Image 1 (cartoon, rainbow, N blue to C red):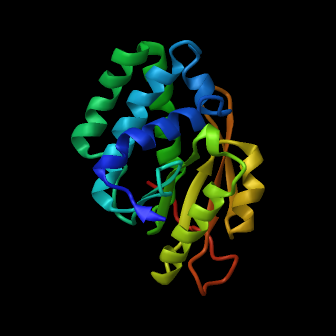
Image 2: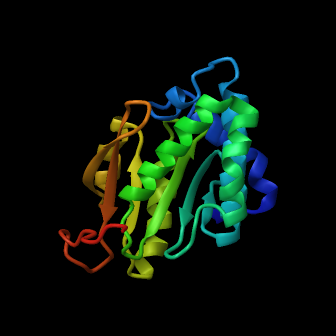
Length: 206
């Protein structure tokens, strides 16, 4: 595992695009199967590039797997990038897709706790490298760094098949969010190292 650099962006975007192409959440958000890869890649590139400034994006040797973390008190996008996201989505995928994704983002923001935490915004393995344990290995190694800081972690599981995997490394389901496409996303919280297993987020955004 290593920290990603700008030289990894193209590989990271390829990994994200293939990993989420048939995802229960992101596939319906980009319903045009013929253009889904192109459309979603533009969004993944924005998020992956922006996250580099935090130095908490981890990759495997050739970015076959990536874990994108947002540290406490930081944002996924800069204010300028966030303001431009609707226009980017409209340009690459149309008004309906843009509105759907912005609504989903609002729902995720409303569900995310205010209590300081590391936010696993993206965890992905390239389709050609699935089944080798790369994703969970990357997750476990990055969590070891977070445990050393004695801070909790948070994620949204877009795929029910992954919930048990996240539970195996200490995440606990919190609530279900029904997003604009009708899909159910499960929020999950992992207490800080050394804290009680029941030490979950007690506050919510205003």
